[in-house]
Image (cartoon, rainbow, N blue to C red):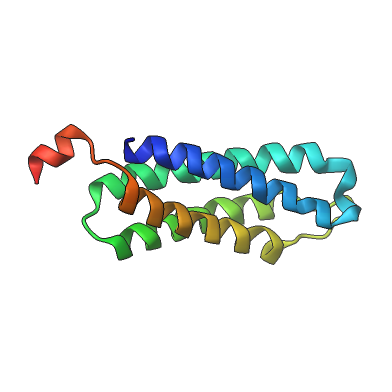
Length: 123
């Protein structure tokens, strides 16, 4: 499976789990659908970007750092524009799982994804 496709699948699955984790916070029950959809999309986007970049990089460390950075930035953007119903922002609760998701996807896409034919022939 190619790195971007693996990133897309893994990112979407982990993003869904991240969104479902919000059930631990009863105060956000009214916006659970938005949280689950947003987290899944954020994970999907993180996975595709990280998978694409993992195909270009030649270092596991750079792949993990790239995933961590992409997850961090997308999570920061989500946290900055989505206060809870009381108007509070939850940066740590959103950014920490998003960054970990990115690091996991960065590792998995680099380690287990298949390089594209173009990238493999250039090496």
